[in-house]
Every structure is written in C-alpha cells, then in structure tokens.
Length: 82
Image 1 (cartoon, rainbow, N blue to C red):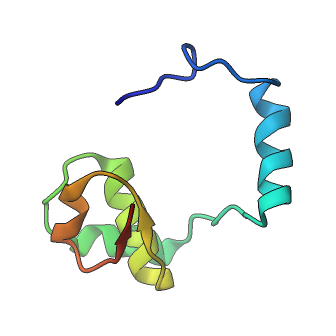
Image 2: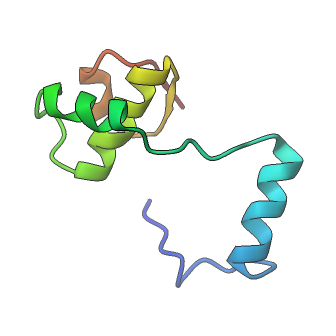
C-alpha cells in the first residue's frame, strides 16, 4: 500500500502533527553524518533507491533496526522490524 501525503487526511497540518507526535512518543531525528554517507559507498546494490540505501547505512552505522515492510532490506545485514 502506497500512501501519498496529498491523499492522506491528517487531523492537523503535517508541520504541527509530526513534531507533536514525535515528542509524545519519544522519537527524535537522526542527523545525517559523513559516516553514514561513507557506509552507502560500500553497500551492495540490493536496493537501487538512494534514500533506502541511506536508511540501511544509517542503521548499520548506528546499530539500529530498520522499520519497513520491504523484504528487500533483508538482503543487508541490518535487523528489520515489521
């Protein structure tokens, strides 16, 4: 299922809802670091999407799990939840 923000009905404007929910749920933003970008260079091309490859690299560099329904991520050595 693909949801686009222009078709997703939100109870509040995105710029208000998301920061509030992040705070309520204890989420934070992971900054993009040079070490993350350097990790992308060494990744095999299981996934061609540059954003997805960056997510994998961030998870690997930070020791995090990736939350996604995409089974393509299983080809990388990163734990996938969902």
